[in-house]
Length: 344
Image (cartoon, rainbow, N blue to C red):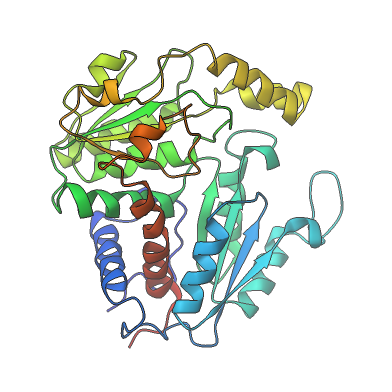
């Protein structure tokens, strides 16, 4: 029985650990039998809508490839080319759009990040509203709070390299200086899903870079249920020491939204970049990695090289950056097959 059929995926927290493991198991099958898996036609003549409020380096590529390899088609959509109702202009409501698109496609993916929003949480609210009215699965392709497809791709990579059982492994999610002004979604998804799989998760960042307190609370509860640990530190030596996996990633402060409203997107970004530049030590280097348990290095991409991490580490023998990037294809195939595919 496929009890994931028709399910939305806005955050991995919404699925059981069994659901997540089943998705990963199928992703591993797809990786091992990429072009001759029995489910490779489960989207035969079916369409998946990709709704991009924000651009992406690899999300469109991986979803289009995933749909094609399952025998279907992924259609690229942008709000600016559609007559949608917003707070400033008349147009089609989410209720109507979701209902109509459900008549055309078997699933809808939505990507909406902070620069397309007025406040933190608005993106999640939009996805929830689409999920309320759509009769087909809504899949987050990254929004202001969460990035479930990336979280699953990350865990798949850790299982490939650090062992199928991740319980007790020390995972370090460390802030890195950078000039790309990153959203919270990949980082928050990362600490959520890794605490669910029983890893000992250390979140490390300079003062002032706090994440969503509700997400932090969920991580603490996840760790307790899974028998792992979750801690927040502001000291790099404490963070790196004994780590099995290091994930360096820049993320913005919560002030970004207020600054964007007051000064516009570009000025808000500049404020973040100038603030981040003051934290010169917060870059993953060979020296910091020498404190680890010969840790693997990971990053969801695109990598801000020699800002978040040095080339030496990113291109080193313990880097799994490209494997994790490839895994986006495999986990998205699994998500699409299980939630919207034809499975006998």
